[in-house]
Amino acid sequence: MSHYDVVIIGAGAAGLMCAIEAGKRGRKVLVVERNRHAAQKIRISGGGRCNFTNVNTDKNKFISQNKNFCISALKRYTPQDFIKLVDMYEIAHHEKTLGQLFCDESAMQIIDLLLDQCAQNGVEIVKEIEVKKIEKLEGVFNVKTADEVYTGDKLVLATGGPSIPKMGATSIGYIIAKEFGHSIIDTRPALVPLTFSDEMKDYIAVLAGISIDPVEVKVADKKIKQTFREALLFTHRGLSGPVILQISSFWREGKQIVINMLPDTDMFEILLEAKANNPKQLLHNLLSKYFAKKLAVYITEETNVDGQMGSMSDKKLRIVADMVNAWHVLPNGSEGNRTAEVTLGGVNTREISSQTFESTKTEGLYVIGELLDVTGFLGGYNFQWAWASGYACGQAL
Image (cartoon, rainbow, N blue to C red; front, side):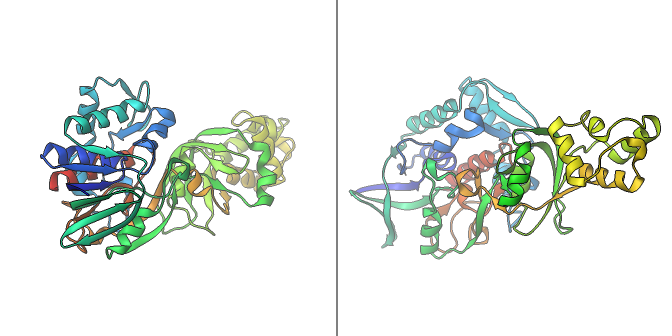
């Protein structure tokens, strides 16, 4: 039996950051990881280049039933703080779009940074270890595995959610949190492509591979004000691309999404002008100036409107314009945890201190990162939450 000041379950972004800070404070720290390698999600993030933060981070880029919970940690550890760490390791990086920062070379540079910091601060990491049971006995946490029992005065849950199970992700963190008295805000895949019914999928398959940039997307629900403007990609299963991943966190089954395929263009005015000035032009040829030919033809087929512009009634032109500027689409689901970048929902933050991340249900228990009901938008925000929550927790251990 090995005893530690702190045992952290999960060697992801939040867990490693927490371990580093606790180690700096002289704590004897153990990180327990079920996978063969630490930080698997970091490795595949950002197309292998890790979108490690976003300079535009603020509370409005996060979804939670407790909107203000994230403020304290985000103020105490900012994107600039992590950038300083990246610069200290001379990791070249660049801003891609919308404040997103990526490594020039490889996500492995971020992992190596974190592991080096752990080594410098005496953090022990054990891998390929599956936790079987955790109990708190006489004020000490007992972490039981198949071959070992690790004990700790404090326990940190940093397991993340079940998104991307091929990376070893599971729901174990929720199970442990429940055992220690916590409630879980309903979880669901987030930042995930949306899918269509088989009938719709077959009909729209001709568009697979076509992308539009930018488009604006919102949920057809007056209660949901959020709108995103980024690129959209048609797939053989449905819709993807950054704008769809973003809106997926707000979309719910049974709701339509509204797609403006030309957010800076009033298509009705364009059509009226063409009708007056170029009456012999065919509608699908006009639309081909703005879209891939297959998509232009699809619009005419979907609206059942085509022919010479001069022969079109204003009513028909309005139907076409509405599809371009306000196309209502009904997804039937998402691709689920298999491809979801994060999990929406999680441990109820009203049961966690926003200053220390300690549980109000069990003394000495802490919960950080994705496991909490705090979910960032696409674009480096979830990593910044991992760094910030891990840092704040590590400072309290």
